[in-house]
Length: 257
Figure 1 (tube, helix red, strand yellow):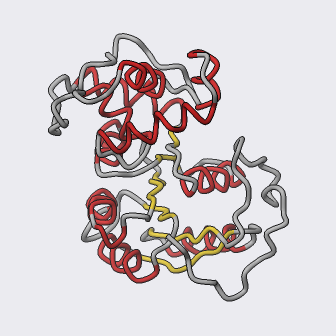
Figure 2 (cartoon, rainbow, N blue to C red; figure 1 turned 120 degrees about the vertical axis):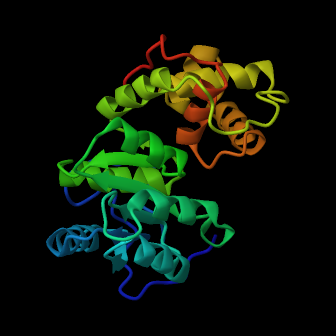
Figure 3 (cartoon, helix red, strand yellow; figure 1 turned 90 degrees about the horizontal axis):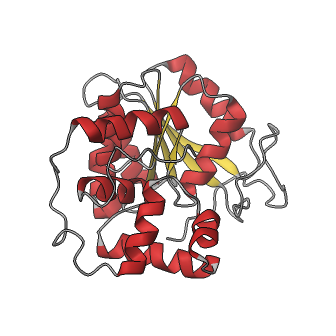
């Protein structure tokens, strides 16, 4: 989706964030800013996040929301690249707002990064099933948060190692699938299944390519086909499919990302 030009657009020649956090491998600052919507009911935190984001080359805060209802409205109005979404907000919470944003064709290109003080299993599981691309705690260092926004904007999933462990524990506690898979994994080739297993275990594209002796472009092609065949938005939902289908079990812990 082509984004409209943003007033005050920053130069795109900066090689990495101003806070000293190197960009994730393969991700470069875009020619237009990564546009971020901040949804949190705490005024001070929203203001701090806006200052942090606006100070970052190649990134701009588009608007702020104090609850889930406002977040959905702003997402539809501004079409940001990423929504920084709090979980606990008055009225509509962040989980429901994420579900509405990620489930609407009008905001299909909008990514959600959950940012909360609580790392409870229920929040992680519910947020990812609602379509969130990542989950971070509010005590995450600023540089890591900026890098996370770029990862999510690029279409990759992001989970802190501790959150990943909690998520897998939740899969172990919830053996029954809660979504209808398209004929389970029918239509997925044997090679695509191998790629899906490694995605579920937390390997990057580069690591998958090395383990399966494939080219990086080939791995990306397989992942793109998996996303299409399994009707998933991103890698986080591929992980959910891998576990809920039984292709991967929680008894085999994933490699920490």
